[in-house]
Image (cartoon, rainbow, N blue to C red; front, side):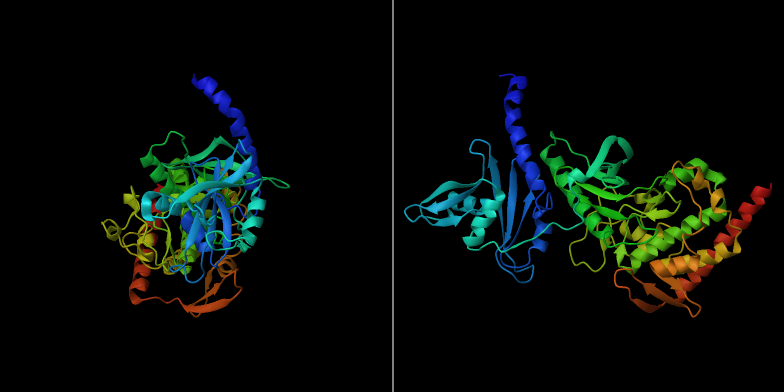
Length: 473
């Protein structure tokens, strides 16, 4: 049989499966391609359940159930595969019956394989149980136990999961490309539609097992990146709108930055960018990094290529694929093919030591004061420098970028509303939009940090004088 005739015979069944899967995508209990580890964190109490998909099984979804409550280390879970049978037009899952007893023994694939493999001496028979729709399946197992547990609390998909039907995009609208991901321009449907950036994994049906493992790592990295981005709300940190994981590929939906990456702009404009404007870039980058460090987030890949220029000409910290939270006890992320040119010396080892100081290395390798101290030094230099009008900034030459203000608010108001403002007494006022609370912190820092800051300030002033002399010539 030719490939053409074979594919034509399979087409009707594929269409039927896709139609039924579309109904699943619209369910409020469907969590898409979220990994087993992620959904197990969501299922906290006995009887909690949800539906999800496993990549590569196009006619199958998984029912994930919490079998007992308690701390995450003590919880037990079942992940029951449910397949749509085109012939019977029913959603089916396998169960094991004790022959002569008629009692359901198990319906989880891993448990069935163990019992089939001879782990038990009792005779068993495998049968399929079918339901016209998933709602009937849920109704049945709310009344009758499945693996000894009745379904109780269906976990609704979080608001940050965006349905595939809400997006409009064309992969030809490419903004950037990497080893495992690409970023394209798209829209979220609405009134009116909102232009966004969409970061998606490369997908290929002919992937080898090795590349599949790498894609799984990339998928987990994207979920981790989205989780960190969802905590951030700052003028100089890229904004997350949500994640699409109904179907492959997984996509991160984020703020669209019309100006592209800062490194390309610097390479293109070179000496046409005045020193004063470069100080603004540094100030805004420090502002975003200071915010991240306050919330105990280490970026680990800070570079000009990961600083984006928004439509109003502001610098935005982006790409949290290698980032991690310092208060998490989980195993550290193994960095492969890391950005060596931008990495601190202590991170170039088999057991890299990433810290807040290693982030500062990316901006000022000679001295490494805290970002709040570094930003204060840059702020003083800005006040001593003749800043061009916002309309004269070089970023205005980028398509889709218009900078109308030096800062969205005054420097002091901008810092106070977003993360911190340096007061006259040397304290830092930290304000969060999530809690609405304000706390005071000592911002004087250590003597080493202050000395580093003074050295850095003198160095920048010397550079500025040299730049002015060369421009006069």
